[in-house]
Image (cartoon, rainbow, N blue to C red; front, top):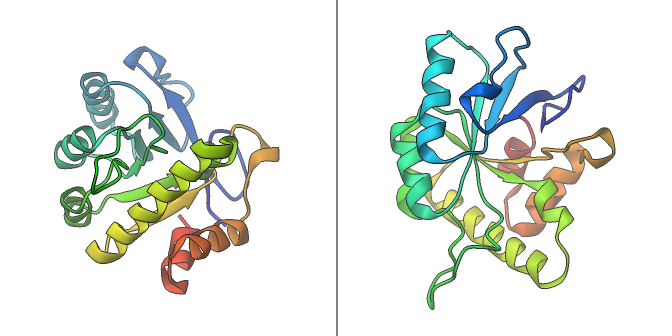
Length: 188
């Protein structure tokens, strides 16, 4: 049961959340990094990680369609964490979920997996939760059509918020994944 989390876990990959290059600690190297900063700062962080011959996982917290497209096309990352989308504006014909067919096809070409963060969705309530779920459903449809790798991660801060592999699989199936896609989405 591999999972992405923000704390050390036996069966998971620990990501250290960083926002600037100063947060990199050469003495304590985790299994991976979750970059939550602007595009220019993310470029500096990734360049310094590649220069130091870092072999772990590099994940980037996504934003709108334009940011995600530039990130996938130009940055060397392993995972793009999709936004829950409650701050993104919807158009008349389509929800702005941070993903479109161009970004999905480019992710397939570069071998980048897209990740739905369960912790952010489970913390929402009411209308915001329904908007986040509808955007996740749209992302699943886009990924299925483009044959893009889509993962579901807990990204929990503590052991109490970790969602099991079975829970993540059933979440994927309830949002419209087929059984093969949900099986692959729950394992990293």
